[in-house]
Every structure is written in structure tokens, then in C-alpha cells.
Image: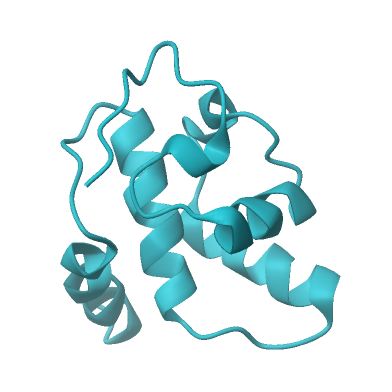
Length: 94
């Protein structure tokens, strides 16, 4: 798994769980640099992506966004599916 220096990483696709397609999706919602992920909300970015593209994306996109945000905020590099339980708990109102 990719594990760049979060203070100097310059490209979105250098982040854990972010490849070219997810980097394009992040750019579509106004995120051009990894540092812009700090303090962002994965659910909000997902809603904006769905709005911008005019279609509903797979909810696992929220998990990928969350993994990148958390990494940039200091969490260890984890696979995106490690964040799926958080999303599902939120969906249940927990």
C-alpha cells in the first residue's frame, strides 16, 4: 500500500487507495492537491460528485474518500474497506 509523506505529497494518485480514476473524481469536486483533503467531509464530497456527474456512484466511493481524508489528517494508511463499517454505522444512525 502506498504510504507517502503526507506533508510533502503533491499528487492525489500518490495517496493510498487513490488511482487515476479516483483522482479525477476528486478534481471534479474541487480537490486538486492532497492537502485540500484535510478537514473535508467524505459524505459531502460524495454528494457533490453525484451532483456534478449527474449520477449516483457506488457508496464505497465514500469509503475511499474517507480513507484519503483520514490519511491526510494523520491516520495510518489503511485499505479503503477498513472504513466501510463507519459508513454503514452512519447509515443506520449509530
